[in-house]
Length: 271
Ligand SMILES: [Zn+2]
Ligand SMILES: [Zn+2]
Image 1 (cartoon, helix red, strand yellow):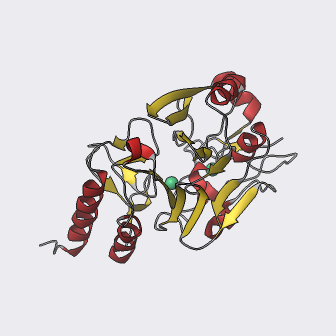
Image 2: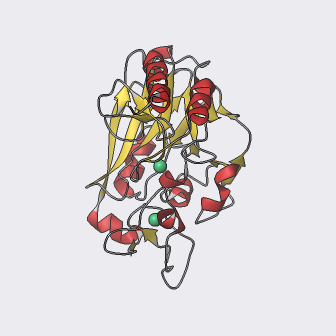
Image 3: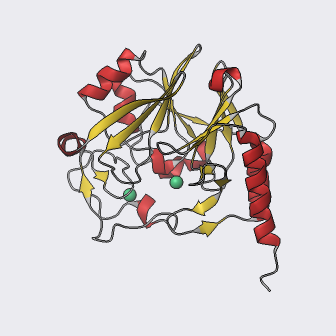
């Protein structure tokens, strides 16, 4: 059996007995479920939950779980000329979603922003013929089910297909990354950010945190560095890690504004 943590949704390596704890949830960025550590399996999830596959934008398909499970993120299938990339992952894959995604051209590679969204990445990769799974090498210690399909990349940039480039921003996790899609937003460019750069509820700003559930902010220098990594890129839209959390117009200005606001808040004297 490959246990899946009910709180973070990450699938673990084969084991006869469920692990005592989930290292991702006992980390200060997450939390252990209030009823204590609980586990499920892919087979049980297939009985209780379904996969939603929904168009988000031209050439961009959202993939999420219904009803909401664990952190509740949704992945994004980028359908680009250089191949189809699944950005971020989920805990559940089933027959219907496999069919729906195959109808969209399938998946040629998987890339994931950070460990909270690893989900059942090995199951997803194998369902599409063992495609490469790009993870940043700085987050290697958080991989709970290793696999030969995992490609650890290092440094600050990695082009995984023509016009699709992973950018390491750090902050939330050391290897936290975003995906720049040059051909997104009808050729004006899109940034797929997970929660490396979090689109917030007003959908006109983003934020940057070490921990979202526990509200642990980042240092000024880190926020500045994240903004500096992505500001040279061309993009009109930002798609965050959840359904409907996107900035559809002038996202670059929104990012600049948000970073300035954050830095200003850290500077202000709390008189
Ligand atoms: Zn967990
Ligand atoms: Zn996270």
